[in-house]
Image (tube, rainbow, N blue to C red):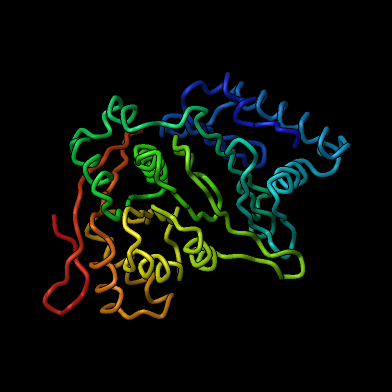
Length: 326
């Protein structure tokens, strides 16, 4: 796309903050600073105008507006991100140059019409110092977290959706020594650490014939041949948990991953569920997790604020099942 960056085009609109647009038929919602509100935000109109100009230039047509409104607009965005959406694949998550995330859902999965969710990241990735200035480390000292990174402890960052797991992970990776090679595996690339030796592998959607797909588990196995000093899985969501724990149990320290969980107490159950998808029983996943993960960092979100709520470690209970202890 000629080096075009959506994030750079929109940077004057959003300054140092991230935005998340939810576009529904005939109405739009904007999330800013962790709060969602419905309004005709002027920023969206300008953002839409910029994207339309670029898409028309790239595809040599202005049928984005003529050919079906939100559906064609969303399809063009998805195609620009190297993925496709159609009746056979009515939902998709794509990344545009500059880190803009686009999620689209087509009818009849969405009975009301095409749904688009556009996440515009902050043009300036946050560092640990930035997070501290915003009160993120009010309950857990920043120096304690820095010590975990310096000691090359394997970390699992947990929290609800939108709590800031990826933001914290990026900041932690950015504080790693410059001489270390960081290899990250993500479904859709989001990590943007300020680190000079960072490499990202991104999962690939299967083509229209259903071939050519590359999942996270395969990419994790491939990444081990790249001699990573720190191995990172952007989000644990399925059978790839087996490959991650196996790698962290075989000499790959300093690694990290994120996991959706409502609280620290819920983390063992979430891991057991993922382990079941990978063919591991609760006792096997427990032994693997205790050996592989040195610390669990849990993030909370409420009232537009995000903070590191606690740090725990895994242990085995009396029955050999997984539990967390402070």
